Length: 191
Image 1 (spheres, rainbow, N blue to C red):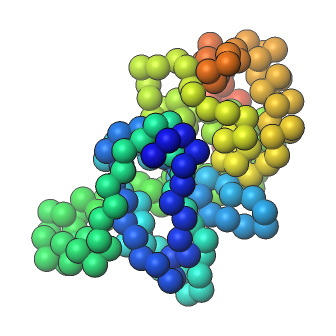
Image 2: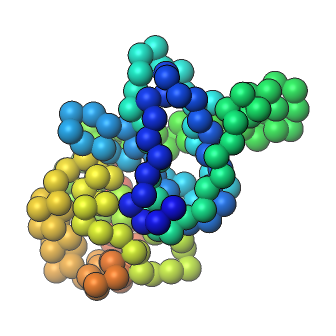
Image 3: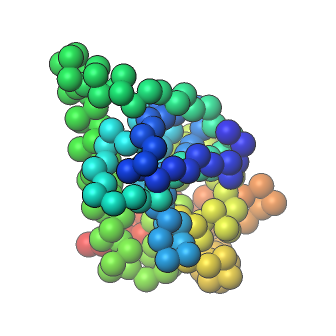
């Protein structure tokens, strides 16, 4: 998938499972004209209908943040393996528990944090997926989608983080300058 390319499907109508083998992708939900990120994933992340029970159709999709390689698996086969192979079932269960913890943190941040705090947290979530690289190849629109805001508001908040010395902007994305301060800003809204 190229950056920005997406796979979208109403979960109740179309079952799918995707294994990320390279790159960074985001799982999002479409609601009220926004597409906030539910979770981010990188190599080894497993996303799809095996993880969600939807009583009504939810528009949940997957979008590439960086160039990514994903394998689309048959949902029925993943469910079959989960039931018949204990080690695989435990691995999927553990992965789902970690995803649920991240989902709870994301919900808490959206509920209690202001835009600057949510943006700092979003940047840190992406940065943590590629710890050796200080440059995040991400656009203002991708960040706006991730936090459920509009690009103009994100631009102002990026300016604030830039003035505080946390980040620098380049034509290729954001350069992380002060990870510790950025993390403190992001955590302030969820403590």
